[in-house]
Length: 415
Image (cartoon, rainbow, N blue to C red; front, side, top):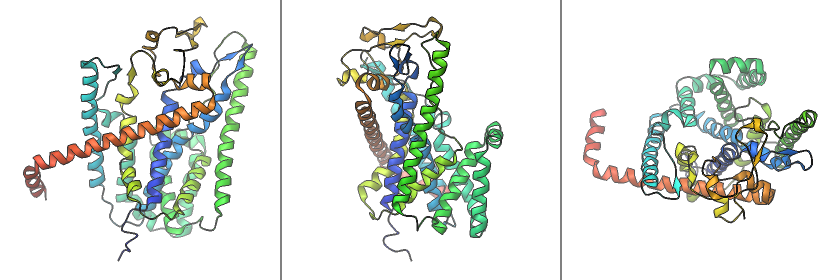
């Protein structure tokens, strides 16, 4: 018989889900709303302003870490289940996806219909071709239900560990990873590996005797390696710029590491997971409720509605008073012209994509205010996602009350 404590969701893992989602939001902010062509300028006299990107490089790692943590948590809790219910969570996610798409579609229509200072669009089929992580997440659970759990539970400790090590070794060699890329199954194999590691932690708790200070130390080492890697790339780019001497453009030092098969990202994610697994905070209702809304938060901020959001006139940081002028400088649309064009009136911002204008906040106001701006945006997006979760819950409740008899008869016929 399960204890009272086990019957409740453990809030330390729910808190980790929330922080993982916040990290994913921050990653998407710097990925989609920072224009490096306009931000990362190098001038022979003024030098480089790349130093602002040291911090953003760290933020950029949150995407893979956040995704990895979600799969780790899933493997940790599902590995011991003899039967995994895929229908209920899958139906819930499908309901959230299409219902939110309808709500956002109506909002986008209203914004355009009444000429509000905000304009956007929405793709009704976002659930099929845009929210890739949802389908990927469900597919990993389905695979675990029918194949992976039975296989992993049939292994002894040594064989289980060897299975993980072999997968990680293979994924660490780009030749093999490129084969997976060509077969379009690289994310699937990574998901299996991470799920298996989460299950191994649950069954054998291999890090139980490692000190907390040791875990924190290696997490900090990982972050330091990321910055050093960035700085090395930066030095190469600057050297190439001064050697060429005929362009104001320098290739970005940024590397897309969202699905890098790097062992370092995996180790960092496992260490963070271990830290939170040791937290003893019981079951806290508010944390559990916020965690339950994380997928709606994901659906909102990764929708075509949010990505296509557009402020007519001044961009958001100007409306908030973070920037006194509309803009300082922006590189011409045509790189061959090698021109820098001033934006001297609000209307000139209309065709620009980065309505959040994170680039200029970092460039004009410095790292501290830039970080604060990203944190405020992240929190604001999370809160908006929570509001949409409330709307979806209300619509579902209303739908059930109105069509209760029909739904009851349908359920009876299906059973």
